[in-house]
Image (cartoon, rainbow, N blue to C red; front, top):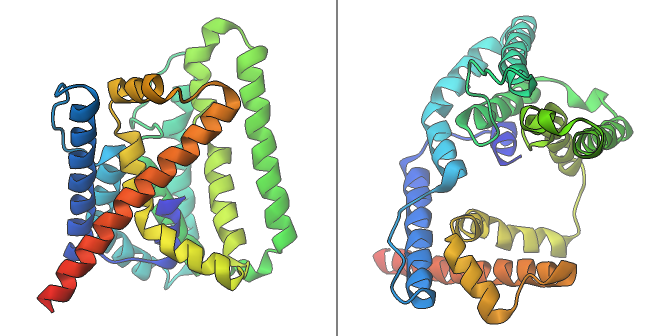
Length: 274
């Protein structure tokens, strides 16, 4: 949903954004490398990575000026814009359908962890800014959101418990996070939240946490599996449902604390420069 939010509220390419993205990636890589060496007795190699999302989002920032220019030109003729967006959706659907067939041939390399997904969500966000969403009621949006979730649960249940085992590899895409009903659910939930006025306290908490979410993602996603196993063995984490929940909260808080330190250091450096 992050790419959709970026498109829905609009953004422009800035070198400061790109450098900040790379800086967060470098910070996360150094932290993971240090943690790996501490837990694995120097057995972790340094590897710079932005993760699939960071790489794809950086690529998205590079094409944003061209997408914005195209949207600005097409928005002068709403009918032409709708036709162009409809063709784009049809092309994406055609590219997605073979991945759920038994032939598993995908002409556009359409899978969840890709630039394609982010670009599609960004363009959708830009398209909806031209549409008059006030005509669509909140209850209608909520019902559509629940329907999307029901579709996902039904497909996951059907794939796991009803369909033959030999079909599972081909139908895996139906339960992945780039399934059309999940993408639509993400879009709907963003629109619903844009209509909700959060209490002041929650609004401030969200404002404090939001800048650290990318670093938290990189720190938990880029963790070496060997480091994860060492942590679990050392602290006995991840035992049962309660253990998993405690582990998730602990990992989030540790990553948040580390990035808060990075942000504080960065702020001090900026203040000294000024």
